[in-house]
Image 1 (tube, rainbow, N blue to C red):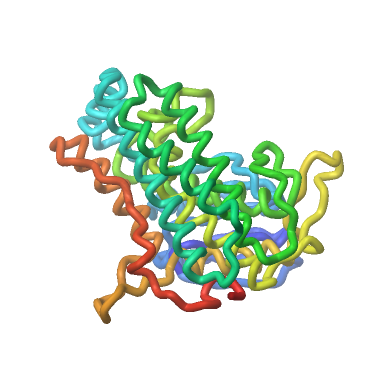
Image 2: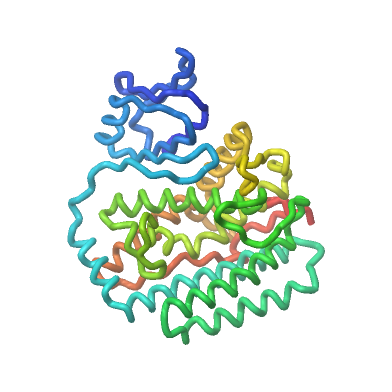
Length: 350
């Protein structure tokens, strides 16, 4: 157990000897050794004693706080100020606009490659393919061809945005759940599909932020996403190629296999957004953790490929190596033909 998710409202995380206890109403509901922990995530009204906080810091365990709806509030991280040379190299990259732009282009090219690979996988596993599929896929192809000619970040953002609209329109043709897709709605998410996408992106962002801090990088200074108050721009940069193969496939898997449906969501109260009810949040987090830790099968009987959590670590380590030595940084590419083609592995119902 490297990641501990706490969702039981009113519970308390305490330290007892070399163990952590989660209690509610004077009853122990979880007892585990702290040496197995890498990160603790709290959702909603959950208390942590000062002794537990001190132990988390001493053992190098990240503590992340979310609202009950899954909105990221912030984190408590151990001090990691020893790698100043790496952060100096990161700031030099930020000041080098042409170099930053080339990195940004590589991230978007990888994202569009992965978008096409994900769509290809769904197409191959589906009996019925909408007539609009080829046109939408063609739009992504055209946007990918224009990436290299982008003269700046703003133009690159426009290319990515156009490709994202075509991608989501094509992806949701493989949504077999009956949940309506109104288009990508972010802040707040007004429907279950968007709420699940945003929640999954938030968890990936939180994981990458912790990993970046762990190697001594500043997660708030990126090369694609510009500086904005409170925004972990570098974490968001590294997420871009990972969104479609990790987050989007997980969400479609959950809804296509009827593990989550419209009845599992409720309104925020102001009518501006929806979120998972407490019981189903536990189901979702369990599936998210299983998805992140599952080894990816390889073609031809080769050894299993790294799991998605390993992929996150590899992205951070590769970027750090690029800053240290100038070694090429190559964002993760998802290659659909090398993945297992099991008809119902993602709830395609073909």
